[in-house]
Image (tube, rainbow, N blue to C red; front, side, top):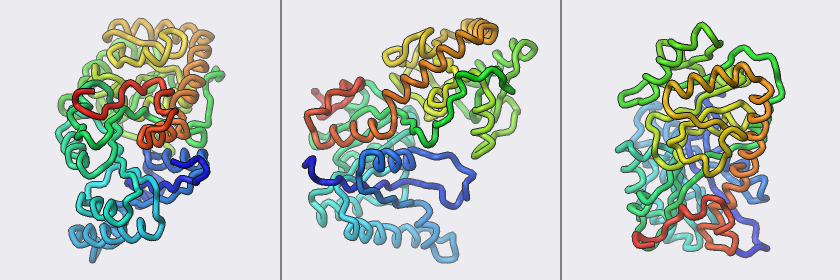
Length: 353
């Protein structure tokens, strides 16, 4: 990419326009912010919303999807992007992407997948895009990524981004909170978090104020209610349905550390490579170890504040939206800066690389 050329970025995702402000800002919005911060020319395309808008009577989605794919081609021809980031887009067809490649040979198509790769649906999404996209970025690292290389594409790790307009608050210096510990999730089959959270709730319910939402019989929260609960919590749990997948995390890690909330992370995550244990985050090994550390830091607020502050600073330094987007651009265009990122070793081009 010529440094004198302003990169034109098209972000295709589910922007949840029809949630009317009740949803959370997903990766699509963060890429938009990162693009603006990098002085890119940015445009969005909300695939799911447009599909339903174009569907006759509002529910004939097959017809709406067909029309949306035509509108997507029209959007690309009008905007002429250099880079297209494609998120959760179940209605966007590979045949449409192939046509974009044919009509606009200069364009780079990149699939973004933030879901866990132990789910069959996630794997199917990646397999569907691996031949039609120039690159795929996934919020899990490890050699398994090589399975989706074709010899013509790039497959790499994608950190969960924070952005200073979304994670602008810094609660680390505060002293007064409604909750000592926060966790929000959703129960589901194969969810390893449930037993841990239940045991923690049972053992600590009389010792700390546990803000627990969406699990163990507690109602779920979203939108501004979710943000308010976050900002009312001094400590938090970053738990995944399954632990042990290298660097995998849901975007809750950005929500928590990005706001300066003291965060407990499983020592199976591999995030010790990015954050110093006991200095920027605290890693735990099982329910007993976690419970002991929760009580310790609840009783030592000065240490909690220091770690939370350092963790927020480190997270914004490493994983801010502008830097993560530059990493994608540098990797896709194979610039001299592509190796400068702390996770650049998790980029694969061929199965033998």
